[in-house]
Length: 366
Image (cartoon, rainbow, N blue to C red; front, side):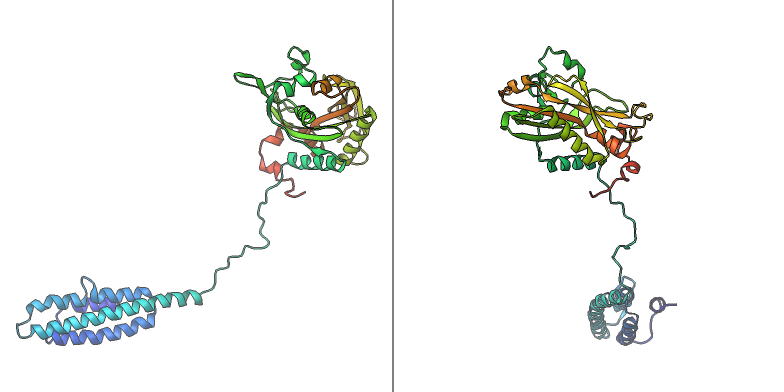
């Protein structure tokens, strides 16, 4: 039986003597209880002491109720004794509450401190850079090393920049080679199908000599293991006096060796693109079989990665360049395709599925 329970049971029966004598006895008992509370040093013991004396069923309440039973002669002295006792208890309780706050602080300071440090050996997922971002950084880094300037342009552009100025007027059959997203009720606006639109913006705003690399997102209505409706492309072009096909071949070869290693071989095959003349397909030696022949390269030892050629005179004329004075070359390829080859992926769509189990294999720093 604790102290409070003992007091409550005592209060249920009248104490002997006058009310003033009972008040004096309670004062002595309270002094003993205060001493015991200070030994316990807890806010809970202070609250228990307060309730036992000042609560609705406490000792002071019982004494005040018994005043009505006192005689007229006894009542003044008894009332004064009970009031003095009540004020003393209230004052002592407030003092104990203040001390209880200090007890709590002391207890927290004496307790074992909370270690807020993370374990140094804990594995925390750090994320990673997307493989397209990694290869894009590497590509642009190598072009900068070769003296190229990075140029940007709009993804929603006018027909003039994406087609007409690139030797593809509205009735040109070459437009059938690309399935294009047009802006509703704005037939002259479209999502660019190639970063070649940046070539036109640059030629209209800059003057030769030019060495430009233009990366960005492009859009075509296409979706299969090697094509997606949105993909990343980069185009590089050079414009100056006396630029030849040999300059282009040397630039391509130096760039591919920088990205894929000194043993990488390239080849050019004659092909048609409306904005270059002559034009060629750009092939890389198969990165999987090193040119020996495999399923990926269809036993040819080569992988097609992009197109290239000498900038068509009609393109120069559309931006008011003298095609007799200036020549230039351009070549482009898919950044996503380069990521597939660099990291030996089988399905282009893997790059855009957002799978952490796949993306987590790539580094966060380069």
